[in-house]
Amino acid sequence: MAGTEGTLLRQFPLFLPQNRAKTVYEGFISAQGKDFHLRIVLPEDLQVKNARLLCSWQLKAILNGYHQIVQQRMQHSADLMSFMMELKMILYPAESPDCFVDFPVPFSISWTPQGSLISIHSQFLAALESLKAFWDVMDEIDEKTWVLEPEKPTRRATARRIALGNNASINIEVDPRHPTMLPECCFLGADHVVKPLGIKLSRNIHLWDPENSLLQNLKDVLEIDFPARGILEKSDFTMDCGICYAYQLDGTIPDQVCGNPQCGQPFHQICLYEWLRGLLTSRQSFNIIFGECPYCSKPITLKMSGRKP
Image (cartoon, rainbow, N blue to C red; front, side, top):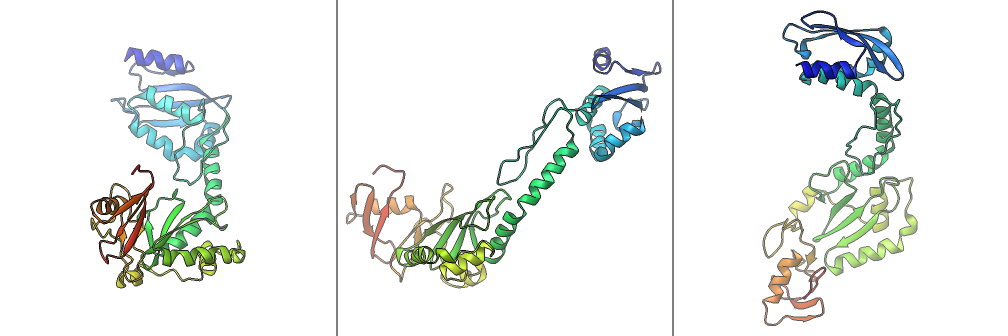
């Protein structure tokens, strides 16, 4: 206990006990270049969570925006020394605090040694407001389309894989700073389904209007209506791999699709690779394997990525 009292005296030389029981401390605490009067009355068991704080009106004005934080620190501080150090950090932190946010862009704060948490909170609110247009775009997509991935998008997620029907989908990567501009687009599915969409995208790119929502622009440029989840689930839209009968496999999704319009079954790349490799009729040229679809026996081609044949 003596060590703690010594540390308290060194850290706060103007803040001293007023009685033998050391249940009353009074003096001054430095903050923002000034000294402020402070009195703390502890109960007999010296538990800070039941202490009373009495301070000058100037200090009250500074702490006004931190009432809940001060209460929280009182509840969780082990002793008076711990609480005083926490109070010092609230009033006059020596360096910028770490901020963790669920943003799609870095959150960089402007900080000076005289800064305060209120300043950080104001910057946080300004950053929130600047990202509102981005979140409005993503929320509309989540609400009005069937998002295959991510299943539970966080507020920082900038990508969406959206079902198009016919076992085809589009993966878009939205720029958080310019959410209504044309996103990066990648079509997944059989060639006979996705090639026409790629052609429409190139042909109609001049129709893109940043004044419209991103979803409306995608509809106009691709000349499609994005089907809702309920509609697709009632059709024969297939999400699971036709070989392992699972959707997720080691973090990957079925991104290989049979090109036969009457089939269109999706597969995981590794599942299809293992299947074709086991067929006597399959042949391989560099990283491309030619074989037959496990479902319809029509010719199927697999281009391996990131794997040496």
